[in-house]
Length: 239
View 1: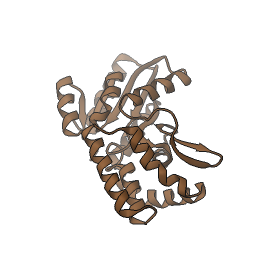
View 2: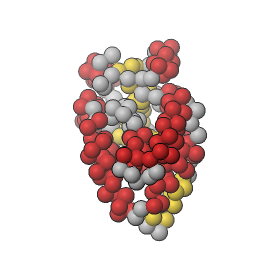
View 3: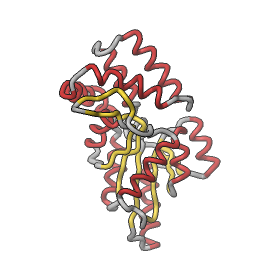
């Protein structure tokens, strides 16, 4: 189904039922709003610019990415690996590296149709959030680019002006995404909502898709595509 047809169907649905109560739109980030994985690209960027040991880090980064795609990733092990470089530089230096990384590697991956989709939900006065396994330090700039204030992500621990290299709380991955969304709904007292839309490409997000009333597969991986067809979930492309 095309993005335009999806939007058209929703407008008809809304106008027919005269829905005026709150709706929520949740977006996965990597390979959904952008054409690539920002966590993986960050690791590659550190390697390319010699911020880390290039041979060791690239091999580990590639292996973790394969595990993610297979659905076998241990998010806590990956956090321990990927947060370690944060401890070697000052926060100010990391912010400067992140800024260059976003401009060089992530901004070119932003999908125009994704921007259109986000704009559509904003125009409908929906409440928006990005829900991503990528840590908040890296994903924050992407959320800011899309002008989505609420970001639910894995959190690197930050104390006394410095990252510690440890994970703060539960990783925002698989069932952890559901936990983060439930906490976000509770903290913000979002109880009187009609629908929760959720857009994602990955079978790793099946738990959150099951939780949301309007799960939508976006250029899905093979496993998610098969399940989406079985469950009659919407499938769209933003490419």
